[in-house]
Length: 91
Ligand code: SF4
Image (cartoon, rainbow, N blue to C red; front, side, top):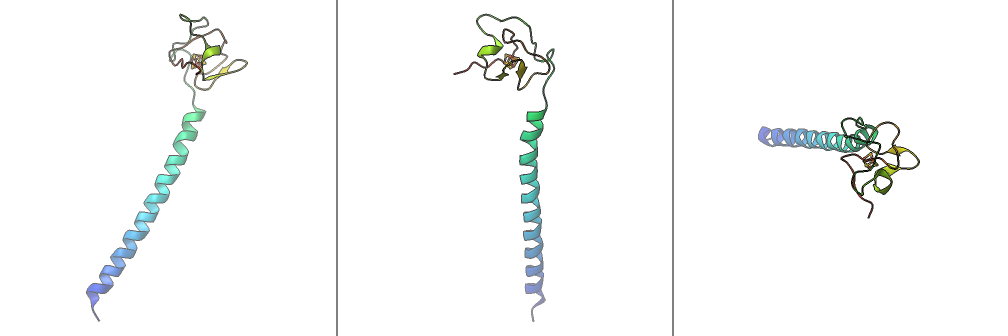
């Protein structure tokens, strides 16, 4: 009998269990973060939203615009002719 071997096995099992718990925790966080980000919108003021186009840019030409009057990232009613600093042109 070698008590050193037993200690090694105990430590290895503990390390494996801890590793599995960490992996599960990381997976849960990785899943939760995109969902939280998708649910939270910023205020129109924070986005520097305006109800008029800026240059040739307007919400109707932005990939974040959701017809008829919402945006993926900005709260409230959004005009197709509006604009904010998150503008990202449709390709
Ligand atoms: S310009 Fe701003 S407010 Fe308009 S759709 Fe794009 S991200 Fe939303």
